[in-house]
Length: 418
Image (cartoon, rainbow, N blue to C red; front, side, top):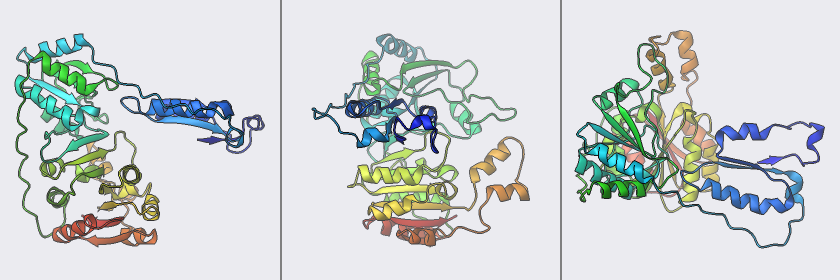
């Protein structure tokens, strides 16, 4: 992150800002580079911090005069890659004891515990103990698809989360946080867990989660368990396009080894059950409460993995925050299929309005929450930025466009009118 030259800051020129305070809430590590000599070691330290488990943003602040100054001719330092610490043996023993006490137990996973090998170990533990596996509601990355352990997330709506967790007596956290409602709702609890549920931690997010699961598997002498067959994907649909028919198409035609960047918000809440048996893929998603991540997340994934097809499942309202990413996709020839869920409204906010007891939005509220007057033409918008695009309102039309987009190289946008 750039800044004025260090000697210019006392003048309080335009753009002079307390950048550290702005960056700190979004960063795991913040450092202001202090000299030309500090540039290389500060950069190495920032890379090391960013790649340290569980992963975080490093922010370096570079005053302009240290960018144009003469750097010393010295060997460049290498980033320190720190291995995550092993799980506490006492926690492993406590978790093993809990799994043997007969109580109804949920093992809640997140972070690197949602990679394929770690999930297989978790399934062995669940099969041996009778525990249920669940993923945290929001996770940076999950490895999913045929041949991998099928696992559901804690639902976003608090009523659904309460139903899923009903009767849970013990919750064991593996790189996850105990579930809470996203907002407060009148007459509803802040936690979807039953009263009296015992919460314990096997491993913290920054620890070796795969190693902790393996240690727990050894502790209870869990035998290898077969990965069950994924639920059958329904036949391809025809007729009116819906989020469900889109999910079914994804289940049948997901490209092998794709990376799904999911910001479908309300439209994608039921996608998992139709894609357990899809071709193996990685699923990336929003992990906080802001919106607009989907398009730039897809850009990052495409640059990081140029040999993999990127599938962006994108709510239309959220896309409007960062639609300039389409131009970047075109400029860099990125292999991204963007699916815009064009319901022309912030459906999640309509749902939240009902959740607090306000009922259906009135005319003035709808004008704040909907954007159908004027309606956004995503095909023209994408084409104006150099991205090939097409629109469809039918299930069979979507299937044809998705197959076309995923079998050709380069960016393609599908406006799915739902």
